[in-house]
Length: 292
Image 1 (cartoon, rainbow, N blue to C red):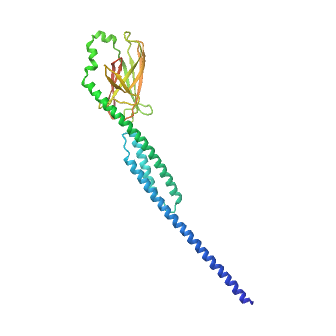
Image 2: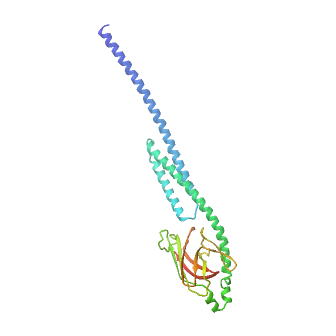
Image 3: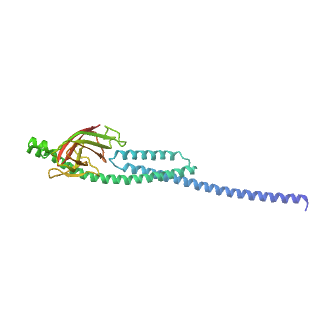
């Protein structure tokens, strides 16, 4: 074999190897392009799924109803987060798989938070329905008491002034302190969390000594008695009427100081609130406070 033939064979081998390599490279490139195309389709699908989920969560928040101001504020915060996440999603490139995964995780978190809110609001609404029924009955009782004010004064009117002074307990130095959640004084209904009622039972050596309860009734501007889970009923002239809070007191005829707290679990509105103190079956003191 001459040198020319050898060179020709080498050229043919090189061309064969080159063609093989080009064919292999083209196959690999087609494979990579196919994988990239598939991934782009998947990313687009994921983005669409995230957008659909976020939109659904946002609509669910719109359907959640509650009269609790603090809860409504929390709902608005979550709705804002959802809107911000949707806005981020619009600007994410289809090739940014890492960012898409982050938004998927964030969407799952937002969905979980929404489910917790649904449970809380269902519980609140159930409690509010129960309180509404109780308040309706209490308001009826309250209106009956207002319509028959002689019930409050019957015993006083039937007794002489001397006997009334001798046997009737009286509350003096009554103070009412509306407080916020940090136990700071407040005059705003929107910040109101609880109220502290303090008073002194005047000395009376003829009054019965021993332990009994003082009952506090707090009436809202519309006349409805404020209630919470600690509230209940007590006997007043052979009738059961509601109290907001109560305090057990040991009285021995001498001046006795006492304080009680009432924590509100319903919406508090601006206006004038009446506070009445009852003990031994009678009203021993009253005062008012205002919220704006």
